[in-house]
Structures are given as C-alpha cells and as structure tokens.
Length: 411
Image (tube, rainbow, N blue to C red; front, side, top):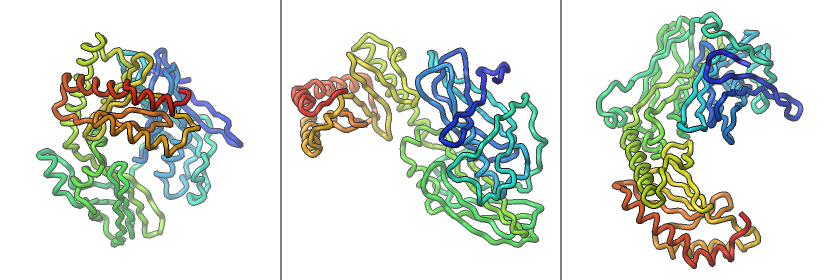
C-alpha cells in the first residue's frame, strides 16, 4: 500500500479469472469515493489510456490497471520492447461522494516487469491480458533516465486567438512537420477528431536522405463541419477538442516506429452551452423552493454535469440538458413481460397522442418512462413550473392509470 501524503492510498492486487490472473489497482481514502479515472502513460512516450472505476459510494475504488498497461503498450510499440522493466505514470482523479463534492488527484510512477519481452509484436494478445507482476511504486521524482526521442513532430495550423468559428471554418488540412536524424522512407498517418468515427488516412513515401519532412493531411470536411458533426452533447462537454494523429514511420531499414500526437482546437459552443446548463439548473432550483420548500443542492445530483435526479413519493425523476433540449423523465414502472408487445406499443402511441406534446411514453431498460423534451432557449422558473405541472397531469391521469394497470409488471 502506498502511504505517502497523497490524498488517497493505492495498492495493487490480482484477481483470478478463468485460467489467468488480472492486475488491478485499488485507491482507498477515509471519505466516500465516487467516480474514478486513471490515465496511464508510458515514460517518454505520448501513448495513453484512461480506465474508469465507478459504483456504489465506498471508501475504495478500483480499476483494471493491467488492461490499461497493455493498451498503452500496444499504442506505443511497433516492435517488442527490449527493456526488462517498463515505467508507467498513473494520474488518478477521484470525485468524492460526500458533499461538498471534491476532486482528489494524485500521480504515481510505477515500474513493472515487461511480460512481453522477446515476444514479437504481431504475436501479442489482442483480447487476453498478459500476466503482469505486481508493480513497484517509485518515489516521487524517480523514473528511468530520459531518452531522446528520435522524432520531433510539430503540427500546423494551431489556434492562437481570434474568431473561433472563422479558424475552424478556414481549416481544411493539417501539416505535420517531422524532423529526425534517422533515414525514413515512408509515413502512414491516421487522423481523427476526438471520438468521431470519421478517420483521415494518408500514406507518403519520402526521400530517406532528408532530415525534415512535411506531410499534408487533407480533411474530408473542414474543422467547423467536423465539430458540428460531433453533436451538441460534445459541444457542451468539452472546452477544447483534440485532433489526434497516429503515425507509423517506416525507416530505411524497414523498422517501424509508432508515435501519437495531437493538437487542441477551440470549442466555440462551450461558453453558450455552459450558460444554458446553468440556467436550466437555476430554474429547477427555483421551482423546487417554490413547490416543495427544498434546496436543489440536497437532491441526488448526478455525476454527469447538467443533470439532476430526485425522488418524490417514491417516484424517480431525472432532468437535464441533452443536445439543444431540456429533457425530463418520470419513471412509471416495469413492463409486464407477459403482455403482447404489439398491443403495448399501440397503447403507448395512444398515450403519447393523449399527452398532446406534454410528454411521450418510452421504454428505458424495460421500464415505462414518461419523457418530455422542450427548448432550453429562454427557459425560466415560471415556464418550467408550468411544464412540470403539465407533465404531472399526464402521469397522474386516468388514462395512464389504466395503461399501467393493464400492462405494468412488478418493479
């Protein structure tokens, strides 16, 4: 167990699964912990992977650190690494489950024996996790001696201020400049905006005698169109976007080298959407004070920013910002598994017609849910209170009671 003055302690343990053991990292603290994210990087290499841990609030939280090590190794190495030991940085952020919510953060450096030493890269397991030994936690500041990277990679253009929309609209390609003393004959580049499915690929053969190379990556859509394609959820979630470039560099000796670099792009939508989320939250808080005499801060506020959940008289509600709309959910109960599916569907459509725009009945994980979407633009507490009353009128109506009596099951 790590016992430094960091805000939480970590330890490593193995769990037997089938015929192999998997390596986990556990964080523990004196307070209740919520969601945890550990970003793993390999020393002197840009490859990284983030693993997540969540669940019921507890004094401990764990992540599959061996899987993270393996995924970083697959990004970083085109060939089998010849080092007996590998050094990883683990940067961990944990939200407390107690109020007020705080974020605990600590960085650890660990050394672990390389389980794939001598194994050809093409023979590495794609699905099975290699058998890592217990990592050694290194004292702060201690790591392997820095190695000089063989490649210096820069990206242009980069946003340096001014109108964000103009910059994104006018950028239809990137130029990667690679400097190296090694003789290079070919670059294969895959470019991708964050988690967007669209990928740009380019393969370029170059003069092995040159020390500098420029690779132009033409985009199928300019940056503004690509950012629009992410959807409003991403617009509201990220203050900056990242454009990633994965390079496979083939030397004159046919040895392959992999590198991953990125450039940060501005999100011109972030500020306005953050304001809309704040407005939605303030409107809900005001309605709660008026209707129930309760402070919204005492409700179960979800980890997803801009979303709230609460219970009234045993009934679960959710409220939040999605795309360009406010969404309100009221859970009605489970479905009777013996009911005729076509008949239930038809009855759901009839109820939605009865609601006349003040909600629709949908399925969520085999539960009947009343859902209401409305514009976030210009929303205030008075508007929201009216919409909540309309919504509750539908939920408490005789038509809804008949539907649940006929098609509802055990919750």
